[in-house]
Image (cartoon, rainbow, N blue to C red; front, side, top):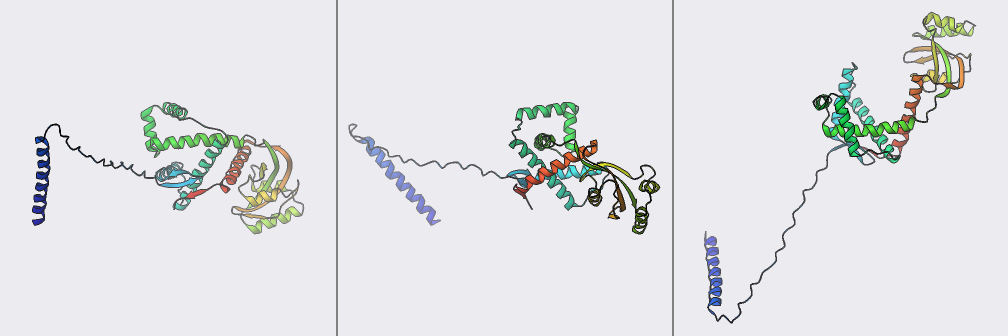
Amino acid sequence: MAMKQSKSISAKIIFLIILGFVISGCSKNSQESVPPIVTIDVPTPALMEPTPTSEPMALSVNGEGISLIEFEQEMKRFEAGLLDAGVSVPGEEECLQIVQDELINQLLLKQGAVDNGFSISGEDLQIRIVELTQKSGGADSFSQWLEATFFTDEIFKKAFERAIYSTWMRDQITANVAETAEQVHVRQIRVLDEGEARGILSNLQSGSDFATIAGLYDPETFGDLGWFPRGYLTQPAIDEAAFTLEPGGISEVIKTDIGYHIIQVIERDAQHKLAPDAFQHQKQQAIISWLNEKRAVSEVVITP
């Protein structure tokens, strides 16, 4: 309380002193100059710009990122797609890996497209979105689709742009895939018991006709697998054996996770025209090879 009173008295004294100077100055001869008022420039403190908060990233490729919210929405779409297709959803870790790999591949393809001179302006992108909206039945229908597929407007725009770049780059990669390739024409005999398979092999080695025995186990196609290029079969062991045999050659018993196989190479051609599904397979293999090469020399960061 005493300190407050003291400050109040001091303030009054200072006020009276200043008032005295002002009165005395006014009563002097008008010819006398009034002392100049001294002003002090006090710098105005600069306004601090708010520090931007970086959006949490789920992963990045060569500095280009996928936000956490975008990744989470992609996970929801992936799982919902499997359920709609009647496919069981794998474990969380496997889902994470699949979605991560897909988004990394999209970024690699997009960056490859940019490196090869492809670009799309913001205006062109918006035109395509408008066209897509019209094809979907209008703005309301499109908005409902976005909501049902866990998209926000902004994230859809990013994903759609990546898809355009990725598609362009895929087309460039597959443009030079040949429509012919080294292929073999193969038939097989497949059984579930190893002992039975070895008995069949013994009969074949004794001169029994392969097609006749194959017909006993597969009356519809007589075990004919058709023509296929390297890497086409889902069972690598059969693929490997097929390309080591000459026409007419018969393999040993080959064990796979779906049974025991004996194969015979019927024909072989260094440049045989690919069937449509085999041609698509070759294109996919070209894309996988390109992605593997790019990923090996890229900086891929996955946020824990």
